[in-house]
Image (cartoon, rainbow, N blue to C red; front, side, top):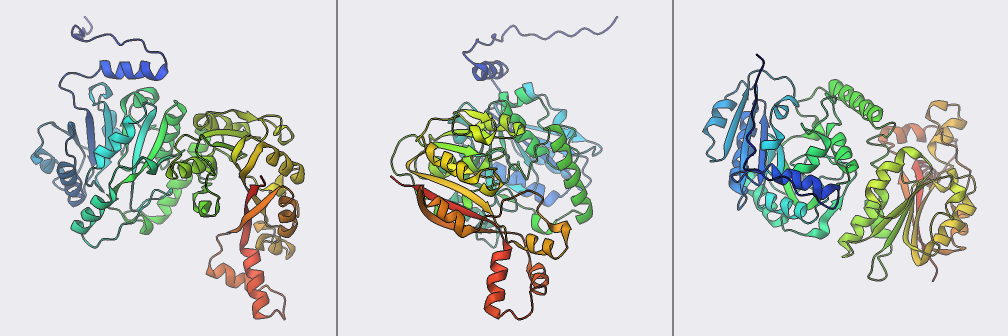
Length: 505
């Protein structure tokens, strides 16, 4: 006879047709909200670690105030009393889900129906401890723009420049420090290309757009959070780090708590390869982690109010120009426009997700023809200038595009680094395979001074530890003085020079 299913939609209203893709998605998400639905669904998933689970849940109950939220507690096959504890949690809008056997971290959320969840969805691991006003502030950020798809707080014990270490020695001090930190400040919101998802708040229609469950089940290993961010951003949404909201990640990441180092490295290698395969050659680390924020103390501040124009040239997926935009937001200029030029087509799509201005993919000789002259307040070139075919012509073109008084940030590969030195000694395995013209830093500085004033020259050192420095020192020619050895080591450790140049008025 088969199966008969009837769904009563008599009291539901058809979604109103909106003017764009985002309003249409929002209309469908609103249609699914019942009159008794909560605004936020907070999902806590636990597998053993009962004490951490208790701290997580109790912090949610204590510090999630003035928010209409439901609590969904997922016990993923624990054997330490987690289920009994979940049943005892005192919250009116509570659902406990018990899974008898742990089948992996992605399985529990997959059994939940996205249609039945709240307008906003937050997934918490059980080693997170939330703090004063955390959800209020995440919601304030989320609701500030309908095109924000996910918001992530900062926390301790994480990477990706999301880590903030507050000074405390016990739980009470931690909550006191967090209460002082957590004050809503839109200047601290940062657009990001990728987020480590710890305490992330999602917009429901963004999850509808990428598909539920939130994670691609193909990522059994690491990089699932990178994948989530990329997919949501490629659906047209902003992915934001809320630098005004801090929670505690109660996990000693630096010492590899709970992980076998060899297994963890294997997981990273497999996950990273999976990411490159899925996104057609884009690397979640090399193509995204080229942050420029640490250097902005050396960059001239904006000279006037208005809408700054920023150009990125060969910035890979675009982190350097997002860094400039985030820095300008902290300076009180939240509306900077981004444009980009790339010679590698694999970066075009991700650049389009963050740029309101043109994104051009072409050869370097066509850069100057692609944008209006004397237009940009800030130009960032991530590719070292001595890797272009005609570096001096490239410099001239960049200054033609830069406004008078505008700023050019560019790099130069050090032609006299330890890699080149070791290569000359016959150690070919350390040689930098990227072809770079041999341009001394003094000569390059002179070329820059034809068009502008060099504000700063910064050394970007290679990750050469104490042991590596000692090995390198043992290879110096005999007879060098102590001062000569120190100078040689300083020059050879430098991988690249970063120049900050202001175009003359």
